Image 1 (tube, rainbow, N blue to C red):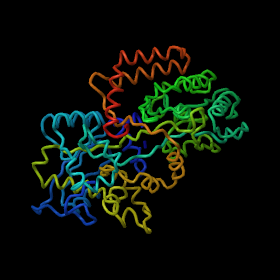
Image 2 (image 1 turned 120 degrees about the vertical axis):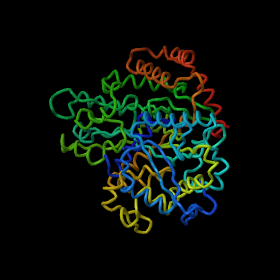
Image 3 (image 1 turned 30 degrees about the horizontal axis):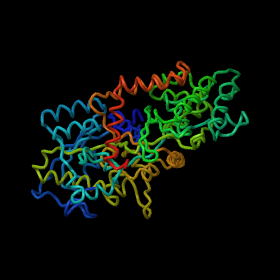
Image 4 (image 1 turned 90 degrees about the horizontal axis):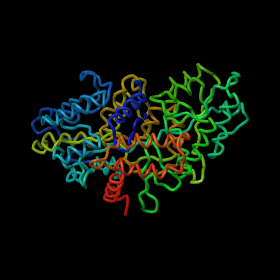
Length: 516
């Protein structure tokens, strides 16, 4: 399921990835309570007696034709609507289409936005302020998504979008237990043991082919070191330094006093040849392929891309004895945390155009829809699992999938406009992978807040993050001495407007209550 920039600020690529992975989870390939509705009863039908057409757009894939779309049919029947959902497989295409529609005042009735669009459209007065509705017409949504998610759709103190419910972490180190057994070693528990094992995987021929052709640690770029940063008490994930609070002070990982020590240790790893020499060139799932092909012994990756059936089959086809196991966060000078998890990240933000307040009947139907898919006993079950008795059955409160869910349920997530109870959902959809899901989720992580922060004028996040990655890589791979680290920070501040970013973050997080 899960990452690109999975971004604490929600990027469209992330939204698409999250959807794709979870669609794979379901069998394909990765709140407001209106008066008189939003109860456990079905919402009242339209006063006109005719179905109310709702135009909805978002990113995604796999949506069937309306006549084959069982979720649309069920929602329309209950809500008195005619849902017209359009999905765009490309995040860039979606962004372009939305911008055209917003500029021409051809507003959808409900549509996905990222944080940048949320800021832009709300400041332009295009979005309906949902704040007055949250405790009356959208109470069920508010209760379903929770207080942190409510803040994700907040801009300048007002709620302009509904955020999906929180997700959970997927990533950990995986290690070749059969290689450890051959070398007489144990699963590493500390940073020093990790270094020792990674070196042994390179030097001691763990695959027994008589060649020195194996890799210690691989990952997608800096993901290789997320858990090491965590062992030094530093939050770093998704390729960007985390923002987190210590003693009521906002800390940026780059300025954390332990950062230089962490970089020094990582340099020991790279100097020892224990890290994939192509690490910074890895893109997509190249690191996964190195693990599947038996080239690497340790990988930092999400559980779906190592434990779903098709990948297990690929691994066993190369070596039937290959045994990949998850590794707990290793201990280090700063404790034992698997780096950070951005609680500001969301799988989706959905906004309503301000013009819809002039059409109260249609606006009520949007509220009815959001409330219904937030009802844990009815609509939420529908958009998670399909039709009861057809796609799933209940044994008490336990959801039992039928074979039909796997065949037809690959697109249901497209209707999860307010999200879902993530752990329960994943354990149903991926019952076989449940131990891996629980393992990844239970790892201690630093609470990062990047996703709540909007970029100030004059700050280019893409350029800044590229510069940070390039400079840190120089320290990690010994191209620059750590004595130049402070100069790197000064350049970041003077050339990249980084201070404005941090000043803005300080204010925003204080306004949201994460800083006193």
